[in-house]
Image (cartoon, rainbow, N blue to C red; front, side, top):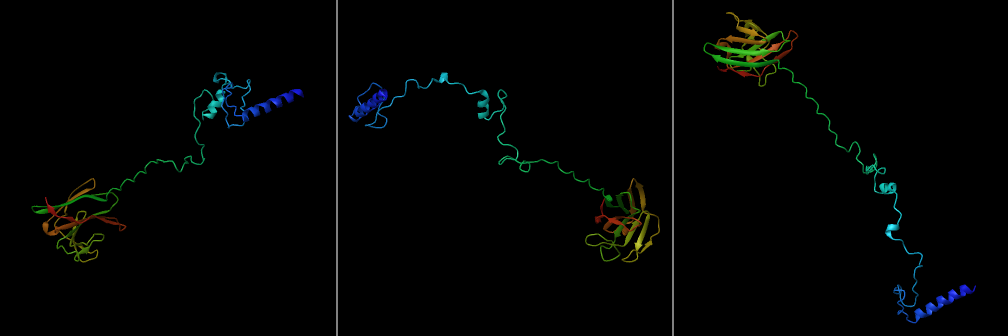
Length: 232
C-alpha cells in the first residue's frame, strides 16, 4: 500500500514540476512532445527495439508466396490471372489463324485454242475440244448480219450463220432453225489430233467472223465467243 502511495506522489510531483515551466530538464534528452503542462514519458529500459540484425528472418516459403512466385527454390512465376477470370483472354478473344480454304481447280475449257486465219486461197480454222461431246461445229457468218441464217444461241449480240461445219461436213443454212443442206465438193477437215481439229474452207464460206461449238446427242451445246477472221 505504501509503495502505491509513493508512486502516486512521484507522478504528482512530476506534474507540478511540468506546470512550473520545467523544460530545462535535459537529463532525459527528450523534448516535450505535446506542449507545456504534460510530463515526458520515457519508454521502459527493457522495451527498446532490437537491432535489424536480431530480427528473425521471414521463412522462404512466405517470401515466395508474397512475391507471386511458385514453390520455394523453383523461381517459377505464378500466372497473373486464372483461365476464365475477368480480364484474362478467352478463346474467342485470342487471334486464331485458320488455314486458307483451297480454291477449287478450274474446270477445263470445253473449247480452247481457237483461231480463224485467212491466207491465200482459203481460211484456216483451228480449235481444241474436250472429251464428252459428239459433234464439233464451226458457224460461219458471211454477211455480217446476226438476223440472217441460223441463230446461234448464247452468243452476246447475236450471231447468224449462213454456213456451218460439222466434223468433216460443210452445210448451208436453210433458215433460222436447225435446217441445213450439205455443200458438195469434199470435206473441209484437214486433220484431227488429240482433240485438236483443223479445217480449211474457201474465203466465200468463211466471211469475217466465226463461232466454234460442241454438242451432244442429248442436245447440250457449248459455244465459244465470236472469233474474227484475221490475216495469217
